[in-house]
Length: 295
Image (cartoon, rainbow, N blue to C red; front, side, top):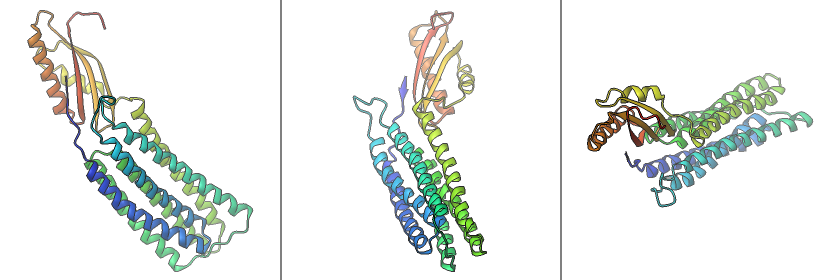
């Protein structure tokens, strides 16, 4: 039937990414620099993780610019899935971060490794973690507000950085007590936590690419069957993201009903669905006579 043009939030999303890019770069430089000075695998690994946050912001700026191009002849459904594509790139980058961390862990095992823990080490970690907490909350809030899967995924990426920072602080405390193996163990734990978040991001993005169902069809069916004149419905299909859903369905009407009246009922069905499911931006309603077995 009809569709609703998605609001172009690209300028606001890009502004969010620029703000977080500046903060992520500052955080990563602080941790990588001081991590190398003190020979801390955990801190350096956490710094590289933060660096990937900054790189993902740059990718996001490119992805959002492409994704919010209006529909054209070759892309009648728009370019929204480019945002999903760049979300997957973030997930892959997270696993690359894990590889980098585990590589450093390996070198710490086969080579002599001693971490120097100072008061500045704790200060750097606490300050950068506070910045990451702010970024994660801010980016997730804006992601929900602007209906951007990329911002939400990037906020999850930053959340993994917070978990990593907690692990680093714990390892610094234990290492300060004389147990230098804690730095190596912390690197492994951080890699595991980061990998879990990477998997979650890839799973969510892949669901979009393979057109996984977005809304419980029984809920949609309940709304449709309340419309006067509808005798039934079937073949309800949804795809897209939780913020931009495409829907098509079949409704059954009285076979003796005039086509104009059937079309009016289809319009009412469309209106009811949009009222109850605000994320639906495009609906195709197929009208069939009741008793038609050709499905």
